[in-house]
Structure formats: structure tokens, C-alpha cells
Length: 407
Image (cartoon, rainbow, N blue to C red; front, side, top):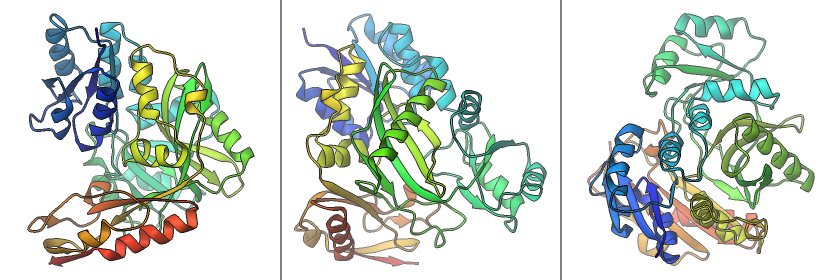
């Protein structure tokens, strides 16, 4: 009989995992609180439960397994490793432990684990209140900082600060975007910003592709920190790649993880040292794992995670690149207001090297002010022979689309 895979989350960014599972002949169960979630169209069964509520999800799963066996559980593009871990533990399936999932779900606990293990990460401190924030910044010999909710996601409430910032406002703004209300202050470290997606096999890190993250609009959207996509391959030496792999493996070990997927936010500091900003124990969103990495390297980390979730072996050969291509993703950032007209979509579809694109809003809908990643209007991904060519193509594609907004 075909094995059955449970995928936690059924949003648009989860669809590629559903498609990959169906292509392998698996029976697919999806879970989401939204009965109209788009990935449900690719599921054989669906569970209606909040992906962020492990108790509700587990209850729905336990009701289903009385009639239908589940062989594996996973997620993608969804910050719910704890829900996945709880289900895996209760059903005795492969996966990370709930203890590891708790650490990655809280940025302060994660950083404390790194610090105990001697893993390089930015200076950090919990923040009790606005007065404490002011004390931390005024007494520090550091000049730039980042404040964020300990359990935030999608750049919600992530702000860049200095000694002249409005700290009362910054504390309140950051705090309101988290679920638990706790925030963390970190040193802002300039350098080469990287996105990694690695798979660990018995503690050994395999990273088929690394993207250089684009932060060209730091000043435009300040104090909000908004990423404008990334480019593969990042400009790294073989030695830097080796050191990044070693750092990711050490960071994962500090969280109690030796096998499975690890998403990384890494900085190569100005002194050349790699530093972990954050790790996530899940496949990334933003079409990085599903589109960019396969196009650039030929490696399907989605398939690797499916295999791992089912208890099937994942080999180093599966994680070794078979091609060396470039990809770039960028976003549109129109002014805030009501979208009155979108022109150029047909022209965009003839763009050389077009890999994928999407608009998050349509005519008549409201474009919000850019304060977090979900506020971006849409994305464009291209592939090319070189990074330089991919950047030319993606910028040409961005310019083919015109978004008219009525304030």
C-alpha cells in the first residue's frame, strides 16, 4: 500500500510539497485551519486545525489515525516545527524532538543554546520594557541594534535601532507583533547576508546552494528591515562554504539536532567570520527551497525532507549539486493605497529565463505600507547562466510591470 504523508499547512507556498508527494505516489493528508486553503486541492484527506495549535492538530490527527495510518509528517514555509515535532513524537515517526522545536520557536532560547555551546552569533539580550531597552543601548559600546519578537516571523516587528531611535515606540511596535509579548535585542552586524538551506546526515552538513540576501532598501524602509530577495550563487570561496557548513552543523548540534533540514540566516562579518543570526528546523518559504535551489543546483530538498519524514534513507549523492546555474528573486514595492491598475503581466510572461512570479494582491485591493515581508506586492524569479545575467533579467522583469495606486 502507498505510504501516507501528513503536511502541516496548506497555503500557497506548501503546494510544491503536496505535488512532490503525489508524484511519488504517496497518499497526502493536509492540515490547515482554512477550509479553502489552496494546497487542499492536492490532498487526499484534509484536517481542519490551526497549524500553530499542536493540541488541536494532534487531536485531529489522532481521530484520523483510528482509520488511516500516517507514515510521516513534515512542513514547509511554515514556522510550526513544534506542531510537527509533537505529532511525530506521539505517532512514533521520524522528526526532531519537541525540545529542539521549542528552542527554535523562541529566538532567545535559541541564542542562549548557541551561547552555551560556543556557537558564533550576535550579542543579544532579553528586553523587559522600554526603560530596559534604553539602558541596554545607552550603556553599550555597540552602535547599531535589531529588536524583534522572540517568536516573530516574516520580519514582523523587526526593527533596526541606534542610540537616536525612538525606543519607547520601538519596544511597543516590536512587542505587538509577537504572540508571547517577549522581545530580544541583538547587535546589528554588517557584512555579507546569506540564506542557507542544508540537510544534515549524522551531523554532517550538506548545503547545495547559498543565496546572497538583498537588503538594498534598508534606508528606504527604516527602521523596518525588509529583504528584497536574493541571488544564487552567493560570492563565497570554497573555504567559506566549508566554514559555513561547520557552523550550521555546530548550531544544529547546540539545538540537539544531527539529522534533517536546517534553514540558516548567516552573516559573513567584516572580519571574515561566519555568524549565525538564526536557524530554523524546516524547509524555507519564499520559493527558496521549492524553486531557486532546484533550478540552481538540481537538488530537491523537498524530496529529501519527504524521504526523511517517511524514515527512508537520504544520501549525500542526493544532496550533491548536478548543475551550476544562477537564480535571482526580487519583489515589487508599490506605494500604499488602493491598487487601481496592474499592467505588463503579459509582457512579463515572455521574459527570458522566467522561472516563476506571483502577485499577492489584485486591482481594487489595498496595498499596505511596507513594514514586513507580507506587505510586498509580489515576487519574480529568474534563472540564468551567471548571477550578473540573472540580475539583469530580474530587473528587466520588474520594470515590465506597472502598478498604479490611488493613495
